[in-house]
Length: 142
Image (tube, rainbow, N blue to C red; front, side, top):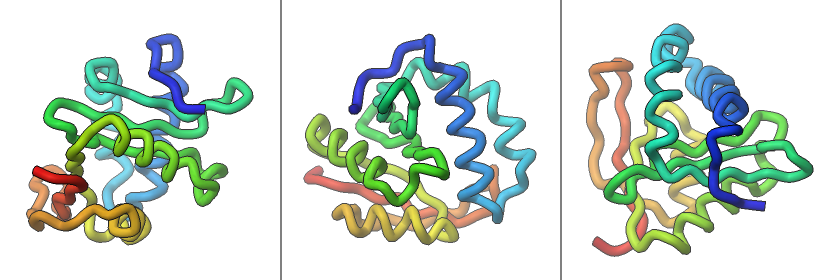
């Protein structure tokens, strides 16, 4: 079931954030995610966060910040491939007319997921922070 995030679940959500980022982005130094942990933990409550929870277990979440920007979509490794990411993206599509995001080109699973969900590449750019190339992708009408 998808529901709004509440602060009591912050540590659970942050555990998913760090574990999933390290696992999905093996081309980026683990320290990058560790060094950004506290900043993300501070910023996360400022976003619109929707969690997917079953039997009191948070299995994934999506965060949307100003201007309909998806700051991240994360599903715990053991629940990936079970439609949770799909449900979270569908939920956001029903709430927002336009969605944008950045995704690392090397994260092929994520890129393919967004293509499958109707997102299109707007541009490609170099991230100075990570030294990696990202796509900016969008869904919906401008």
